[in-house]
Image (tube, rainbow, N blue to C red; front, side, top):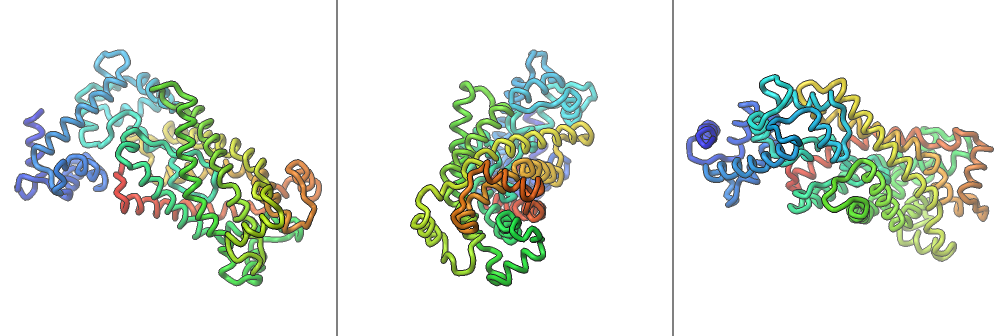
Length: 458
């Protein structure tokens, strides 16, 4: 094997100076069909360049390959459950089940097909090593990670289940860079779609009064009342709450996972759903006063509040501490249908794609992943929307409807009796209109921020 590595090093070393720079490595590996995109060589180079001189000499190149081979051997052995020296489809199904991913035997066969060089429908150690030699993954968990339901994509809601990070990402500090990249992407995305978000809130709160507020009229009224700038009213609070919410949610998620799983046990889909829902509830409890202020600022008239602090001061003075938790119950109840349906639809779409479209690879590509994520989140929103509408009405009713304060059940009854079931979905059109631009903008910013912050590409 050493002779093969030596020959490969000589082939990659175009200028024959005894070292490889990043471009030589990336272009050489792409030329021989080992990697598809140049970015994929970055992690190999960064890991292999021990003395950080910006070049890989032969010793570093050999050390990287031998270390990586050891890790791949461990991954191979962990998959080869019956120790017969080959990996079969049933063993892949079993291993992914432990990771909380349920796939069919046919889907496992598609995974095998992409690695199987001799057409035996099993993968031996040589095939495994050759396939993953320059793939910077180190275990089976990372091999199927492109199907991870990433929350780097922000569609403006706060109920998504937090991201999963590998032990390697936690140790190397990649996790906080990814969270920061996601936070910045969320801020840009929310700011870009803020006019649609404010229109949604206005339609949720005021829609029942006119009964006829449509998108055009809504925008016209907002601009007439407060000018173009008023379209972004409440956005500052919406952006500021990203940081504390992400931090609390991530910390709580890790704690709940530890509580729900035995030492060393992998987190399954059910545990992930429960941990994620509880983490969401914990984060919402802590940042909920900011949700109330965001709604009050969005609904408020020009000059009513000079900013976040003025809004908080006035709420406290006129309504007391309890006002900061108005609508808290429907908000909390909305987490379960949102998270559950989001996760279930994503798993369904993933299975459908693997069954019908996976040919040479189980990697679906960016467009499919973004589409699946956007569609599953939209379904989650649709399921929890009536609760979100009631929450918004409860947050705003003190300033809109005078002293007539109603609880959750009372509001539900009144909306259904006066406006019918469609009344529970007021404002859903601008809400759905912002999904595609929000997904596109947050994805582009997220990827660029990951590059800027030095998050290695999978």
